[in-house]
Length: 107
Image (cartoon, rainbow, N blue to C red):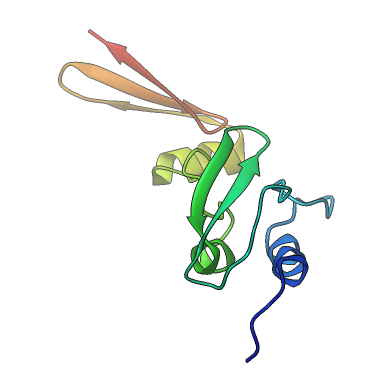
C-alpha cells in the first residue's frame, strides 16, 4: 500500500474519531504525517496536545491516544454511560465516580 499524505491520514483519523454529532473529536492542525510508525502531535479540545504514533491513533478505539480521555476503570465507564454515581469504599478512603469524574475521599 502506498504511503498516505498528511491530508489522507487526517481524513482517515477524522472518520475514525468523530463525536456523536459527526464532528471530529480532535484537532489535527499540528499533524505532520511521516508514516504509521512516526509520531504525530494531536490536540484534544479538553486535555491539550499529546503525542502518539500514527498507527496507535488509528487503531486505539475512542480515546485515540489521549490518556486524559481514556476511561480508567469499569466504574468510571459505568458512571459516564449511566449518569449514576458509584462509590467504592476502602480501608482508609472511598472513591466516587459521577459522570466519569473520580473523587477520592480520605477518612
